[in-house]
Length: 267
Image (cartoon, rainbow, N blue to C red; front, side, top):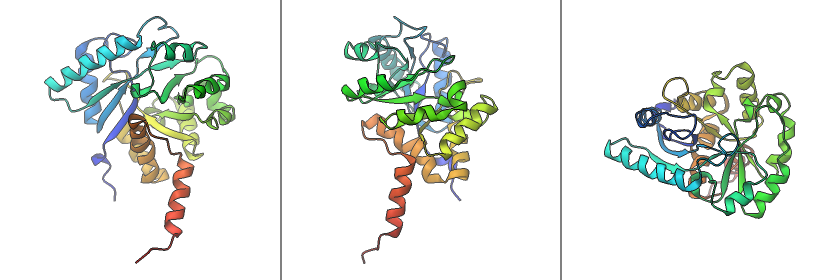
């Protein structure tokens, strides 16, 4: 039997910086959330404050990098064992490519390869033209929590062209556990079952009510879809983001495993 509690996770979507968006209000709140992340088994986290949308002209890249650096120093001084990297939860905007080139908004882990895109909640927007423009900059999109988008939760087929660009899908750990309601939970599992999801992330905002829930999500995925899938979306693909490596899809992982299982061993 797998010992789920011994896993070490990487979180690519977390609002852990103090006083910068709708995450922790104070430094004490930020530290409390980071302790919760550590308790949940997370060793590395990308701080993704909201950028653009209602946070337009706020939270620019330089400010986020500065706050991440200060938080890492504070965590080290208090022996809280988690490493924080800069990033952004970037609201879809026609200026994104221009703002990336001007170093105003951030890619995940500040690595220049992946960007976390947040869709407007109220309406559906076809982002395929934006994905094509991002590809011209060698940047690929990670779509944040589509299971909580009321249109995509009911009609996810609209995303299939996006995934072919490629773009990648990130669902929220708490959605899988039903903490964002039945519709989000059903959609999150449907997306996972379909092999569309590349990441599970916490989208944590605080230590009470919007905490990590990664360990519980990993356990549920392992039971339902196997530990290899759970490791891929909770550990391996997030690590690839930090390292600037190519993402592996659930379907390609399964195909690779089938080849390995059927290949003759050499003795």
